[in-house]
Length: 385
Ligand code: ZN
Image (cartoon, rainbow, N blue to C red; front, side, top):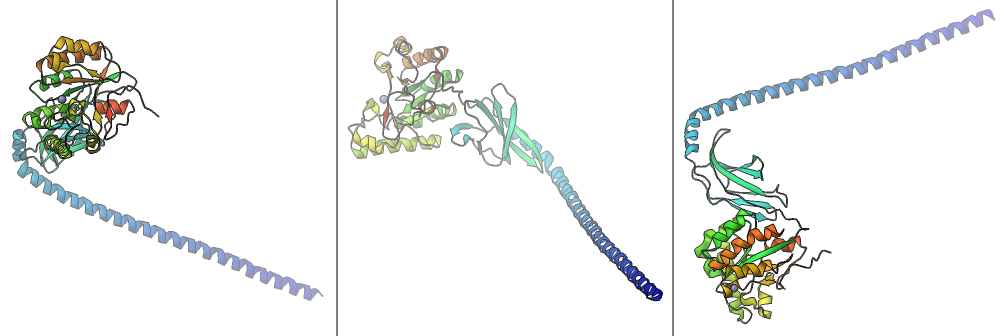
């Protein structure tokens, strides 16, 4: 019995030792495996690091090479470019127009320029560089409504990355009138021009950050291209008033179309865009015109009869004693007395709290959706839905 017991203890002990041994072996194997992984990972990291370093080194070498090239170019060109920059012309005919995307800027190409720098100044603010472009146009998409911006552009030449600026444009400005839809507004409209008096009206409008709408006669615009551009630059609106001041309400279809189309072509030639609104001469509208006009027709709510009275005081009185929010005021920029009246009336209306806006602006801010082929006499009843 005792022997049998010893034997069992002995076997159990042996089995126990074997089990422990197995466990120890297993554990050490596992550790080794993990360690191997770590070693592999470390090696991989080191390899990656090395590759990265090599890449960096490569880049560094490359950039050093680039620097050397740039230095070479700069040395060769710098003095020449600097001299050239001093001779660069001021970009001419800088035009800033309101577009759906923002302010659309364009100017005449400058000889020898590598590109242009565009600057913007907010009212009473500092001049900030907006963009560097190599073409003679740019759209500033960062404008906010009801804010006035002024732009300046200069031509430049490049020597490597270095930029040498030419002389900057001076007083060229674009006013995006600050319109408060809650405050009263009126649209001054001038028909039958442009004429020698239009520029003087524009000067007064500019002085007061005000705008007006000019319903031009197509056959006159070629002689007043600069006036047209000035009006557009100031944010004034250009509308069609036919090509030869024809009575389109009674005219034949072919006359209607040629009177409208020729006017649009002329305006497009000068300003680069077509008109958005039309005023029929004599306020005469017929079915054919409604169908063919292709844009809203704008009549008036205050007729100054300036063409008839040729009296500045009478025109002024007519406006100031009748004016109300949403009025469209009819004048003609063809007579010196109308110009005199405009010069008086513009500051007076502003003093009375009216915002002087274009017809399209008034429609927009009054919530009027003006439709093609329809006629409007005022924008008094706000149609906000
Ligand atoms: Zn007319």
